[in-house]
Amino acid sequence: MILQLVASAIAGALCGLLGFYINELKLTTLSFSIAHAALAGASMSIVLGFDTTYTAISLAMVYALALGLLMPRVGRYSEALSMTFFTLFNALALAMIYLGQTTVLATARVGGILWGHILAITPIKLALLGSVTMVLLAYIAATKRHLDAIVFDRRIAEAEGVNVYFHIVLLLLFVGLATALTLVITGGFLLFTLLYIPIVASAQISLRAYRRQWISSLVGSVSSAGGLIISYCLDLPVGASIALTALAIMALSTIARLVANAVYRRKVKNEARRKTVATAINPRYISALLPF
Amino acid sequence: MSIPLGKLVVVTGPNGAGKTTLIETCLGLLKPVKGVVKLLGVDTRSRSIVKIRKLCSYVPQDFMRPPHDHYTAYQVISMGLASLGGYSHGDGDGRIAAIAKKLGIEELLDKPIGMLSGGEQQKVFIARALVRMPKVLFLDEPFSCIDSGSRRLIAETVYEYVERGGATAVMVSHELSPLRGLASVLVKMDSGRVVEIRGL
Image (cartoon, rainbow over the protein chains, first blue to last red):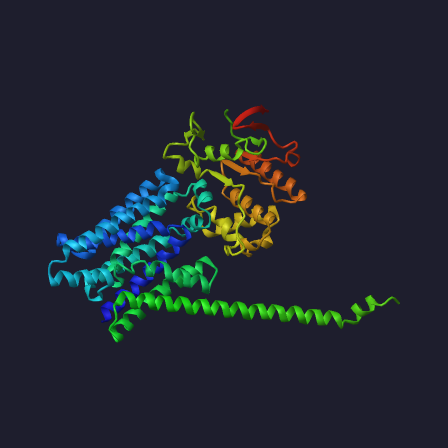
């Protein structure tokens, strides 16, 4: 259980951190299709008889690289192109699942791919997950100024000689790796839960980009580990538990933001009222109004 | 058309003349439909243009940031040093402080960019462009939000930089009065064509 808990916490942190860049760089659609490439890869493993995670990583990485290289050539059609591939990967996943459901054992494997199977996490895969997270952190630390410049304004960064496409391709590759490694935890249906929900929750907590980045990572980690515990206690599918936990955190952060905004508005209103009263009873103000 | 180093070039012309397109084509952000555009001797369609851009700065026309943008003015200016590398924090701090003082924005450095007025934001972007000490400086309508008092200051700062650093500044502007006596080349454009060049 400790192994699974650590793995889900790391996966959540990794996806939460990547989610920040996906959102800021408007790569949501592209990462959505990469997540489905991972799902198609995992489904292909049933028919081909390979390891689920490694097949998912292979397809997701190849697709992420191809997409990244095609982006400058297709320009504004990159989102439409990625959705075309999304359709292809969905069709592939469904076809493979249909073809693969021949034995009871295969049916259990299909279930794991679709709604998550935390026991599929092995020490080797945990080490892989940890390594990917460490590499991502090292990359962010080494290129922080470049990434900040791209997040702030992609066009100015490009004009100043920052290799924007290199960083985008690299981030898409990280998305491919992260989604493929997370697939066994959340399942294919809810694969993007940890990529998108934590960043929405973090935006309710802070407006500062630097803080949002780490809050998103923390929310992802807490959602993932918390969801796993809930799944274990209530005997629910792990992917669904993680998604519901993440959504609960997002709802709580939204309520907290609404309350904080209301308190702030009331404070500003009271201060303005106090100032009006103070001005009205100020003898100098009154004397200024008198004609003598 | 060829622009030598050490000149302050002003590009002017009516709306839709192609002034911004000219700047973005020079930087390689847009590809020329025909002909060749070279920036510091390098074809803008080649891959090495990314390295050449490190020697350039660009202040775009549409620079306004939304109110929720919480990067401080200091962070925005220091982002300009991102692609240069090899600058320690100390060096960068000194350069940022000097240019901020010159443009009169030193008190704005800790404020979020989204909370600044249009003119203040424009000065921050000009500071970001200058802090890079570029060989070629592209400024697209740098006076659009600036008050009349500060326009001459900005024009003189750019002129001083060009004179001292042997760099070239290409400035798109409808406002020619702040540049009186400073611009060495005037380029007039209309309907995507250069119709007049004075001073080359």
